[in-house]
Every structure is written in C-alpha cells, then in structure tokens.
Image 1: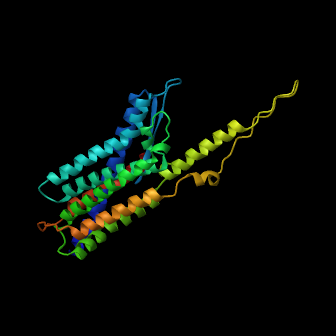
Image 2 (image 1 turned 90 degrees about the vertical axis):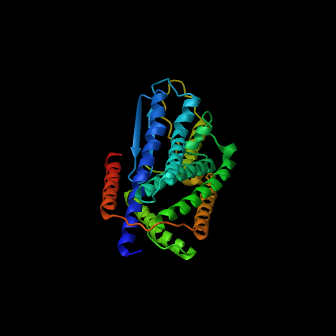
Image 3 (image 1 turned 180 degrees about the horizontal axis):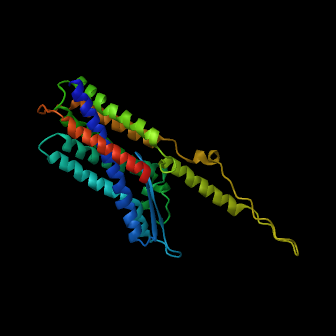
Length: 320
C-alpha cells in the first residue's frame, strides 16, 4: 500500500465512522426515544446530542398523566431495538454488494457500530442496573434480580467483533497484501487502530459532560438519589411547640458520591466485554484468508466524505 492509498483509506474510514456514528445516534434518540415519548402523550420532548458521543431525550408529560408500563418499556428500549434492527439490515446489505469499496465500508461501519453499540448498552445496562435496559423492568425500574443476564451479551458482542474484523478485511484486501497473519493484523491495526485513536482524541476534545455519561455513572446517581430519599424519610421531624414561631425549613439532605460508590459494581462486565471482543477480532484476523481485486480509492469522494463528516460534527456540536 502506497502512502497515498494509506492516507485515503484512513481518512475514508474515519469519515465513514463519524457519519455512521452520528446517524446511529440520531436514529437512537429521535426514532427510538423521542417518537415513542410523543406517542405516549409527552407534551414536550427535549433531545440533546453530543458532537461525537451519545445524547439524551427528556420527555415532559402533562400533570397527572404518567406513561403506562408498556409505553415506558417502548420508550426506554426503542433506541437499542432500532439500532440492532437497522444495524443488522445495513450489515446484510453490505454483504450483498458486489464491490467492496466505499459504499460497502460505509454500510459495514453503520452496521457494526449500531449492532455493537446496542450489545454494549445491553451488557453494561444489565451489569450496572441502569440506562435504557431498565425498560425490561418498566414498573420497578430495578434490574438487580436480572443483573446476571449481562453474561449472555458478551459472546454476542464477541461474535459481532469477529464478523466485523473478517468483513473489514474484504475491503482492506483491495488496497494491501494480506497474504499472512502478520500482514492482516498489521494493516488492520495501522488503519482501523489509527482511526480508533483519532476518533477517541476528537471525542475527548469535543466531549460535553452535561450531555454524555456512562452506565456506571448513572448507577452512581441512582444510588445517591436512593440514599438521599432514605435519609430524608428517616430524619426526625420535631413537633411544633404551642404558640412557637414557624420552624425553619429542614436542611436538605446531602449525599456525597464517595458515600455510596461502594454500591456500584466494579467494572468486571465492561472489561469482560472488551477482552472478549478484542480476542475475537484478533482471532478473525489471524485465521481469515480474504481475497479481493486490487482497488484504488479516488481522492475526490474521500475528501467529500471528510467534509461531510466535519459538517456533521459541527452540526451536532452547535445544534445538538
């Protein structure tokens, strides 16, 4: 692979990863959460999207009108379901294409990103008992009895990682010689690995803590809220003396994060998911033997994708 081909391949993959990720997030929040909230009777729905991360949907319902358990389940699980469905369809469409050029790479990026994102969300949501998977318990919003379900999503995520690595090689084979395990591993790390670092660096620069969070952080916030409610209920309320002036309002209960952090499980589940996915993808790279016709990336379409990705990030940054 020449230097020009390497640069174009990396730029194309980065641009398509950004575009696919923004499309998946918008579909998740608008199609999977905002629309079900409106259908459930929300009078106002606030949608916020970060530049390169996730986002949130905050519905407001009229006084006295609470969504039913079914509506709550659809609202919470709609984003994951939509991502899994559209991701699988895009992946299938990619494999049906005759060529393995930019359209194939774009569909593959959207398909894997959507499916992997849904599986990661399910794994971490069940493990920490927070986030959208609470839709599986729409009445109690408590997954403590089903926390063990996270183990079933680890092999599914590993399988998705294996397929993604194997199918990415079909694109890469048109631009580099992949006749050895070392070459397949090396070129994948040099391209996809570099894109991962670049995406992570851009996300770090543009991340907004007010819009983004993790399932472990959400679990911590739930524990703070529960402890605050418990302490407020247990606080003694002195009986007012006769003819005494009105007592001052009670002092708000303050719970520091470090007081309840021990209730948040250690990151065993996320680490197991990461290790299984890495091992599966490396195994696919070592065992696969892709064949592809030599191809050449044209500079103009790749630069157009880069401009579109920059425009998408800017739009999400300032309007999301």
